[in-house]
Image 1: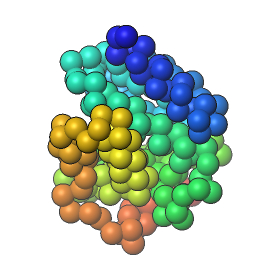
Image 2 (image 1 turned 90 degrees about the vertical axis):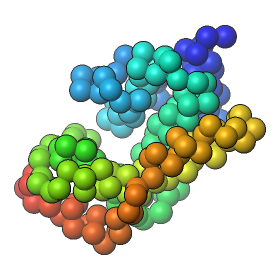
Image 3 (image 1 turned 180 degrees about the vertical axis):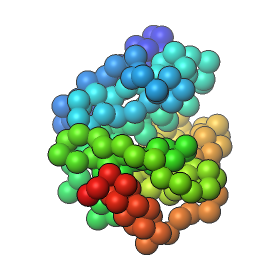
Length: 181
């Protein structure tokens, strides 16, 4: 079974098990060409960048799939998650300072100014990102029986210095102000 078929198989089993009514697409949206994948809550589509990941080992492919599947779970069943995760779900902070807020099932965008290093740490510290990384790590370890290659992938997505939630809320307020909410 090739990687694409393996991903489809794991995806289909997972969404059936977790009752997720979502689709899988291997062509990513514009501006996501260098991302591993993304879940679009508005369209209920998990975009998985198979072309960008084609040289990666199977365990790494599964890690990114489980990460995005966890995001689907967070958006579709928010009541199953902590208030920090639920409250942060409507905010996306990109590495370049572009920010998004989900308002009435549409993404509003803005740009805020901070040190560029801060954006990386902010993104990695978002409660839903921390949760998705923990979930992906645990699922991939189970699938590959504790394979050592997963640990460095997991650690790469952890913040060097985790931003406290109270400080994240200040950034969320800046985003709200920038898009006039």
